[in-house]
Length: 298
Figure 1: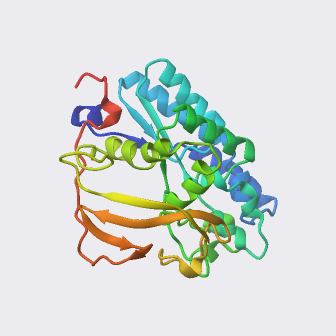
Figure 2: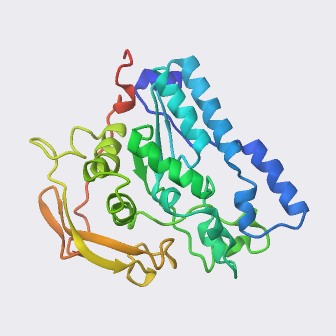
């Protein structure tokens, strides 16, 4: 953190206590509990809360900013909020799946639960409700997908006899906007403006891209999404573009779709279909001293 602060780099922490998890995993396996559901049992909220508090304490000591990624539980949010109330530059994000899926998905029969093995683990409805409230109140600053696509038929089955060997991660990048609009805006949990801020503006600023991305204005890249809220569809892996053999949101009703997408002013999606060309993308390097450094003496 000291060296990162000197360079203006934002430290992003996956906050879980690995030692506690190791102990709990061994206990589960010794008791013959090897199914995917025990991934969540062996990674209870406390292991995330403890690690979040520890990371914040280190940031406090180093007088450095901290960004806690994929926050999933009430305890971690409360730790972040306390730090913010103290004036410590601690930021946090959550992910689409932590706002819509709970740990009972891990109990699906015939090893289907392995599709939902990600870290931190999926939580209870109380945590889901608290995350939505935290977003609305500004305690969490961004919503990501934490996209990590493994094929279920082969890769996830590496843990068929021991949940510890199931690759952790799930696809979700493609569905982030539609799920957030459906579960957030359409239900009144967040406003349209909040969605834009959480989905685009804050992530761009946090990652040092705030002078080109995440905002519509003179001098910015003309990256524009025109979202049609009147179209309804059912999310299915058959129509997904993620290149993985399952979709975490299979069967979910989605309200709306990206009707048109402009990349630096060029139309790349029309009527919901990609019409761009390979090679149109550009690598945009992030700049040091992003949003998390606001107010910190450089």
